[in-house]
Length: 449
Image (cartoon, rainbow, N blue to C red):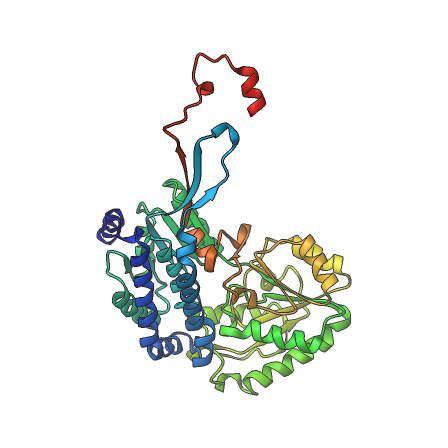
């Protein structure tokens, strides 16, 4: 493919190894984003009906924060690290260099089409790579403005955005990239990993899964209800780390459901469809899927659908079986199943019997949180909150097993898109004969080693 050939040739020229070149590229990107701020907001409104506030909070703001962190620290992260050298290598010096991989493919999803494309891009550029961006075709307005930003910030041989559907994606997976970064569903993630394995290409997979939210007997129900409703219905539930289901202690079930219903009304009004702060589903097919899933539980509140507007109301469901369709697949929409447990051990067993989720949320006392963390596995954890671990770009973000492979954000992005390269410099003045044949210093060698 011509675009990938240009990226490879540009990387081979050595331009991206220059830290000054990388910094100037990222500064131009920052200026282009600031210049097109209003256009980004308008595009997100068109694609997903996101409000300006939500767009700034969850998309543009996070990209600018990532730029700030990389520009502040990339010089230090790029420096060679001096390492200890053992005595038997006397006369040598040991260092580790951070090497860019080369040409990187970043495949982005549609749910946060600006942030989930630009944040990994920033890390890849900071680490010295050339990048091909493949956005989702389901967010065309955001792709259009992002393409304009990329053209203004980078020469096409350095960073190229290639729009298109599944055929283009399949073509790209046949190319010999040096690294692939994919965000999307576990099903597609397996296909990406299989294609990469055939060419021995390293990958990062940011997937998803059914992230549980455990509300213990000692939880602050008012706080839990408010923060769960905010985290779940952000972007109409189309968030990879959204609470996918609630496990609430049986003694708190009624109070939690009532409080959550109250907060839905407080946040979005009696008719959320009219709220300027409530987004829409990405496609009509996604709406139909939500309608189907609703049928497997009792609707406690919500349940309203408008296909022509791609609208599904914030919906709480109860009285459902752990084997229902709602509990068999990641929901990725504004439906929140609520189940109960009688003991913490029962909640732990429920979570651990299922694939490792991308996030785990716990509301309760610190002692309970420690027990939950110790006995479960997940990509990340929030205690007495939801989503916000993702917003701290100093923390690693990534999954485990079915929810992903690898991590990024801040320094973790820089490390993901570069590899440690060992270098040993030996003295030309000292040459210990111990290593050369004929071997006659066995006793001395055993003492030294």
